Amino acid sequence: MPAPGYHWRMPTSTPPAAPRRAYKLDAHDTLRGLGELGSGVMNEATGWWRALLFSANLLVTGLSPSAYDARARTVAAQQIRFSAWQVLGSFTLACALLSYVLVRITIRAAADYGVAEYAQQLVMSVLVLELVPLAAALFVALRSGAAIATEVAMFHIGGELDRLVEDGADPLRHELMPRVMGTMVAVMALAFANGALAMAMLYVESYGFSPWGAQEFLRTSGAVYGPAVVFGCVLKTLLFGAAVAAIPISEALAAPRDMRQVPVAVLRAMVRVMLAIALIEGLFLAAIYA
Image 1 (cartoon, rainbow, N blue to C red):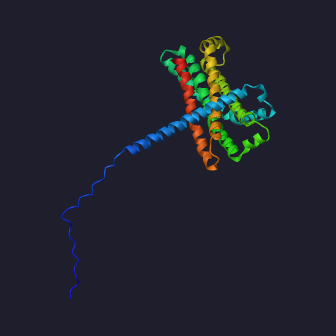
Image 2 (image 1 turned 45 degrees about the vertical axis):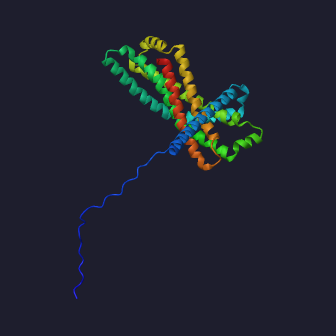
Image 3 (image 1 turned 90 degrees about the vertical axis):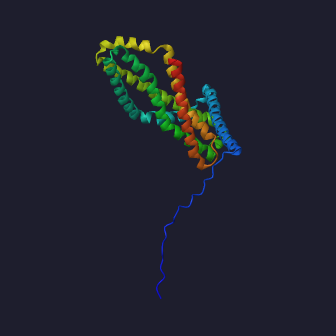
């Protein structure tokens, strides 16, 4: 009996594909999306308002001379040491290289375009008044902002701040305010020290090591650094330092008492710190050059 044969037939036509169901965005989905958007906006507004209220409390506490007792001074000194002193060499080296490159480029470009007399004013206005304070704020924010948020969040979750209250101490006065003040001093110290270094490099690049250019250099500096400009630069640097520390602390205090929420609070704090620094810089640029 012969074996059965197996025959394969090519299909005469391809079966039609099943029609795709079109997705319809109904009113329920629209309302739900709008509700999530509104909730996110309200959460962001609440976070910024919480940071402003905490900063106001810090300002009131910091204006009281009695707040600076031995314990507060010790915490502030440790914060200055961590935020500024330990990184002074590396940050100064980085700023020196950046200043040298920008000064050389600006002076050479100004000479090529026939506007060499404006090169010093441009470097003083852009590098010393804008870039160096901004770099100091970003550097301290990356080094100390996340560390402060993590430390305060751990205090908050572990109940350390509550134990301070039970012992009769004020957490705002003895733990939180000194960290903010120390961070502000650190940002100002790094900004002003490296601003002076940039000015010295500008003088050497313009006149060499000769003292005969000092009078002209001082005259140009006086024309750029008026009282209003100096006050604005100091105020901007203070706001940078306050934002770098106050925003992480406020976010850490608002975090749920769950260890898994600490990275979320730190990330949210750093995002808001960067936004605050950009906002402060933009407002001062608009006020100066508008």
